[in-house]
Image 1 (cartoon, rainbow, N blue to C red):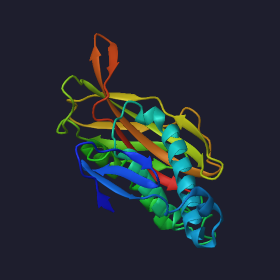
Image 2: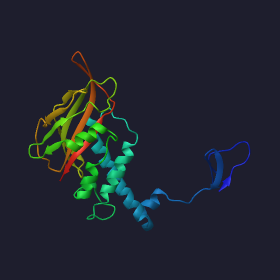
Image 3: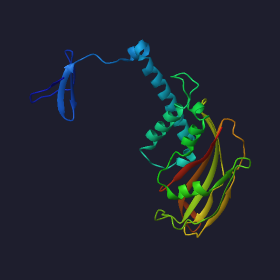
Image 4: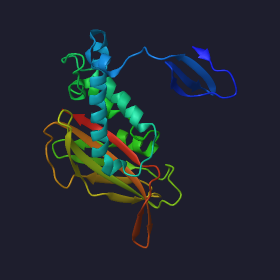
Length: 248
């Protein structure tokens, strides 16, 4: 690898030489070498690369479908790190599949393990949300009735966005097929409480109670609202989304 000298520096390939820049410095090197798509597809020494690419693609598809399935709760939430954090989680869960061959390991099989379910349940879709953490700690969910209950939690001490007057809490029970990448979601009516309430208690049940066929996910959603003369305005600040349970 040689540096380019002179007033005019170029970028591209000319007469078998690659010209390029790194941090504003021009370099030149002989073209060729490295890997190409045909080599990756066919050469035996690229087998591990093919396996990793296949599993990475599977995790990427799962991430996309799971994020879309959670969109009723995540709508309006902005976090540039969410994609990368979800991919890291799913790759870790996929590696817990000790049944399938490399290249064919699956997130859904990784979730058959207690560790896989724990990793998914503890994943912070909306990090550093103190009120969500309190709800997650003190809520109780019953799978038989699909009822979520909480008693006497003081919320007035938690920070809220300035325009907010109320908080809305909703429950979702999702049936997610991690292999077929299909899902269904049943959501409860949203319960509203004034943010200056001394303490709150509630029971939430989905409008339709259906036992999951695949993997059941219990989703808790928190949003802030500004209510003026019975007009309700949704705020996109401090959205909270968390999984209370994962069931196979």
